[in-house]
Amino acid sequence: MTTPIRVGVVGYGLGGSTFHAPLVAATPGLELVAIATSNTERVAKAKARYPAAHLYDNIEQMLAAEPLDLVVISTPHATHAPYARAALAKGAHVVVDKPFATSSAEARDLAAMAKQHDRLAIPFQNRRWDNEILTVQKLMRDGTLGEIQRYESRYERWRPNPKARWTEPGAGERGEGVLGDLTVHLVDQALLLFGPARRVYAELVTQNTLVNVVDDAFIAITHKSGVISHLFTSPNVAILGPRLTVLGSKGAYVKHGIDPQEEALLAGGTPGSQGWGEEPESSWGKVGAGDDVHLQRSEPGNYLKFYEGVVHAIRDGAAPPVTTEQGIAMMELLDAARLSAREHRVVELGQ
Image (cartoon, rainbow, N blue to C red; front, side, top):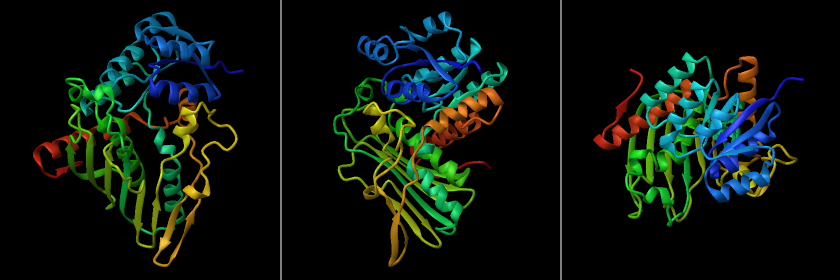
């Protein structure tokens, strides 16, 4: 039998405990052997759920004690690249939670170090496998919508009580805020669906007076393919808009509501179990044109595909499920969005 890939997870907050550890534990070929967290409550929860995993206070202790093949970084944004570099230096591959870095320059440095050590640095973009994204891809393959012209994508929430980290002095300078939390998902999805960006326009503002970060973002992307993407993220929306609106020459697809996998993971569900990622008919989107509109079954979401792809990349030399080049492209676009918002102008890319 093939020896399992030994995995250590750094950070056991929402990302580590809800997404990474359960997905790693459920993926054939991966073995969760170590978790690094110094929070007493999180240590207790990790021990209870993963009794075979060794617990460490920090990444330094974990890297010194464990021979790891893969290290997963799920910590505050400003620590992503430094922790990933430390793991690469010890000879491990890395999966880096979003954002891949805090700037495109930092992302390029991380990619260069991974290449130098002949290891993979893989951005974690699980929401490529959200049901609505998989459904859009199916509709595009089928030609149902014709030529895609405009795409609107939203991660909106009503959270008048902000995250504590967002209220801290200097939080924005440390990469906190909606850009790294949710906007990066929307950017990745848009680039995945419609290809590289040609120009970017952005409005990045702070709405909640309690925070020291950008908490409301609008980004308009003109893709080289000609598609126009409008991306919205904010926790300040009291009535939520559609999750997706895709307009094509033959018809449209409109979907409300978010993929159910996060809720299932929060409830302690097992990824890949029977019915995983399925959505009830009441949550399906609509597709069609004019008077000819009908429900469109949502493709089942499947976050396991990410870590299955990681296994194939490490063992078989297959392309990673998300490449470092794609991570750099995401950060370049966010850098351009910041410049656009700061200078109130359209920024050209890829000249």
